[in-house]
Length: 354
Image 1 (cartoon, rainbow, N blue to C red):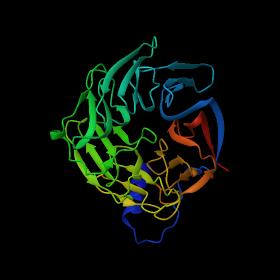
Image 2: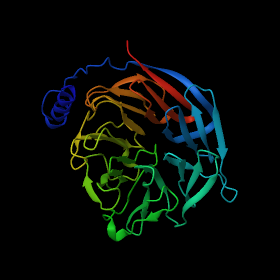
Image 3: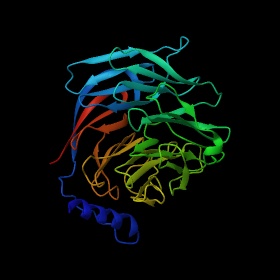
Image 4: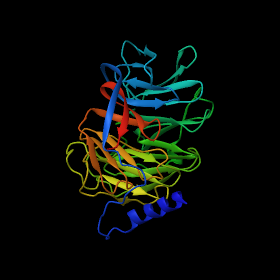
């Protein structure tokens, strides 16, 4: 019954645009602060993390990767070098046997790392002069997807169907046409989201749109959004989906980070249509937004250069709960705990309530 009520509340939030905005109280105590436990501190920038039951895997801008256990009982650090160059990682994903990391450019490479013996294998390489990859995800143990900026008039989307051993690029004839000046952003490995059989890719620049597949990358549709667009560094930087239908997008203008209009939106129909939320309120530019687990799509958290923000009404109203501004990315362990990473550190966050 509670889930039904929460869903009806969500519909009300995004459909009644002319209704006076009033905070709607969630049944849970709202987050009011954070407690930080540092898992790793080093000279690095981390935008790519993925969680397992007792650890966080990460990849950095200096070609290092590894994991930290949540209880700090064990860490592992590895190093990858490609032709004397340390790859810049901004995407990471996993299946049951391996970790997959994607470097952004020159060349863009997907590396597979065995969880059992840490053997590193290069499984994909894109040497195109415009190659720049933004994210990677897995639907299941066998099927995964990675995406990058446009080449030859379409997004670069590569798919694996054999547990990551081989990757194939989807031909442009099978993808929606990209607009001139439209591309993805690699802020937090959240410009590509998978849920069930679905995949969503968000873009920015000249257009801020949603590229959607309902069948694990076999067919694609593109949808418009009301997010700020028309500038090279404006658009959708991050997305999350609570389930197959309820999703949230955020971003803004990286070159005007205080601008908080047209930078957040919500959908309840898998991304076909979007309604602006907290327009002109809350944070400006943000690099990562995530739903809190088991919250019915009501509780959300954002991290980025303006601090940590919390909403208990699907993003309609936001409260700043921490001034920490150097986190690029966040993923939840459970309803109260998360892992965040950014400049020089990876931390465990406990969200507290007064």
